[in-house]
Amino acid sequence: MAATITFLIGGLVIFAVMLLSVVEREKEIGIRMAVGAKRIDILIQFLGEAIFISIIGGITGIISGLIIAVVLIVVTDLPFTFEILSIIYIFLISLVLGIVSGAYPAFVASSLTPIKTIK
Image (cartoon, rainbow, N blue to C red):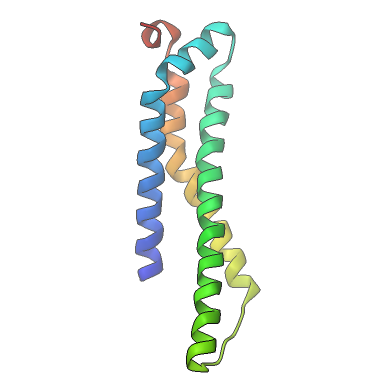
């Protein structure tokens, strides 16, 4: 349950950051489109940024979890089991989270027109 809430909050944070990034970079998007960038180019750029953020977050979470587990093993002498499949699941969930939470901001960015953005 805690992992679900954590992933939900992470998705909302990525969504908010990417939407804010679109708003702050409207002029850049307009210039790129005016010079010849297609909608798909802008879409791929912003979706790629969201996926990159989520992958870095997933890797950071995995490393942090393993460090905390090792510290607890040393301090408390509890048994430790390591499942590579769970690491793969966490990585895939963070990848899907980046795609889902970055899709709308990427669509908004690709829908902008150069005339609206260059003021």
